[in-house]
Length: 445
Image (cartoon, rainbow, N blue to C red; front, side, top):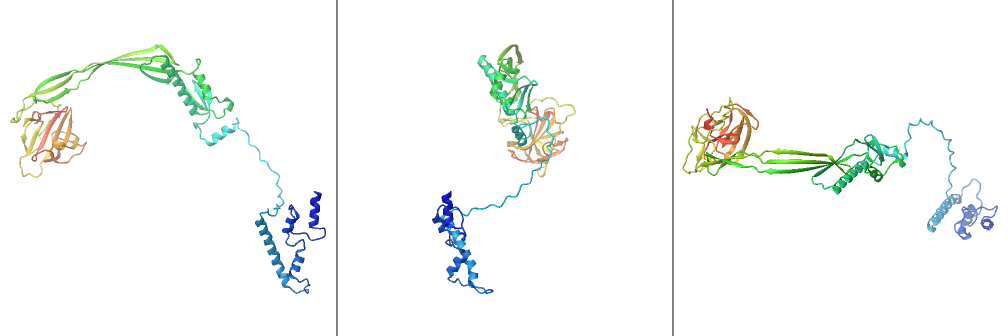
């Protein structure tokens, strides 16, 4: 320290003007290199530099007095540039005196709540809504706490693992032949417990071992259902029908297979079979024959149907009557065999061929259940009259009703036309009972 002080004394002797830089540079040469006035007073330095040390008369200005500040400013800029170029540290910053800090004031502390909440739990409550899946949750079985887990999701997964464990025991220990359904026969609750201390939160592994132990309060039921079926195939009964063409048939009754089913239910609780709960059920369903009417009428290409072809079907319900669907029309083709095929209705043509529009009328009151284009039928309408009776109107030129419309007897539903496979303007009219076509002449008044 003494040697350092001597060096500083040699640079700035007492009583002389000190250089502008008074930092703690490491050696004399560096200090001299950054002292532009060579240890002299700045005014004397610039007076010597200007070569004029004469005093100016009082009250007169000299150019030197004007130039002196300019030289000082330039010197300062040179010093700053030298610092930046040499990479030396800038002049030390002298911080202003700190402002005294006022004495702190304290607000009254609010009254504490009934229970203090741990910091981690408080953060969880702030960040997550109530009932969040990651809130600490107590698993309750029949009103008793079994343990507190880190979240409800963990508790639900734990119960699923316990059920899978007991089901695995049943499959391994017993010969399971049927389907196995696993349920819990307890009242299960998941109660939020955010204030539970860390040391009271159990791991899923520890609680799993507790719930599968022999003294567990959990009742896991595995129900095995074994079903054995014995089927009696249905039998087909054929009946000849002289009104049907050979090669054709009509299914009158579908019938069904007979069946005898035995169901055995075995109950397992917590992996152990409860033989006293074995339940056996027996189900039977009788076999019903399928009844089919088989056509026996010989097919003749030249045969033309008469007015009373085919048999009469079931009687119409009381009060149900049918009128011809065309007011001014003539029947051109009857129900029955025609050209080797079965004609299932009556064909009507207009009495007056020159009549432009021939209206088609509802034969009986009912509800429109079909309006569509259907292959050879062309544009057609079907009306449901109840009791299984349905009338069909085909080859229409246009339709004036819509699906679901209620119509009364004689209401116009469209115009006679030539749509589908019709060769001329006509109406094809059918009467079907329970899906089977019958000769409409037996029902027309």
